[in-house]
Length: 322
Image 1 (cartoon, rainbow, N blue to C red):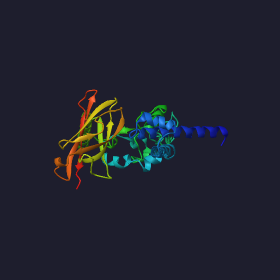
Image 2: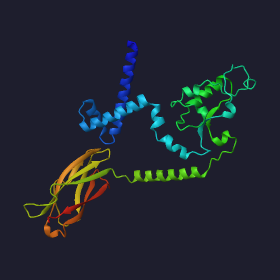
Image 3: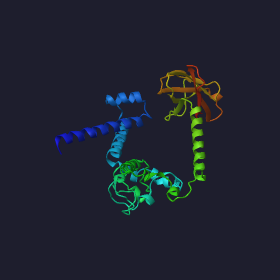
């Protein structure tokens, strides 16, 4: 260990940690506005919860990509576990052509491999050295293979230098290697295509029908209902309005389900883009308008500026005093 080598190692780990932190922030960005998150991280002003989340994802990425590396593919990645169930003998995979490559052995460029009783594989072992999971593709298909094609490139380069035909290691099928006919259209492939088409259609419909507005209603748990100074029955709620659009919008709030309700609090609010507005309100009703202990009601949030047809309803309940 020299001073120069130590500097390089320290710099390398710092780069890994910074990239891992950036990755963690993209994960956390699904649950927190990215602009605020970046500023809070840079100024060291994040909440304890967010700091724990960022630390977890940072060190998870740093450990997985920096230290465990191929061990993740070998022991943790679920892809290798279910890909075998989707394969058949007509599936394109990275494969070694044993009929052409065996017997293996070193030789000179000008030597005839047939005269030496050898195949095209010169046993240079480059296909193993470039493999990110460290397997030998010449041993056949293995679950650790991620079909990256690194061994294909390495072998093709060697074949070119030896003036042999490329394709000793290539994307091919088991049937092709056995000299049999390859079936491109088959029942399993059609089934996967139908499933993919259904999922794609559902995704497109979900995006097309997406409403960029969300409402969460939280009731006051300490006292479900109380009688105010006017003799009305009053329920307290906390409304959380999430604006999922990219513009600042103004919304109008209302409630229905009971006649002659009185709204106590703001009924028009402006919510910034990608922000949550917390609004405490209360609803009061003349007890003569209540027909039972519990009545179903619905809160409505409607965008009024800029003009739009965005509108959502969320059901809740209004309680009467016993």
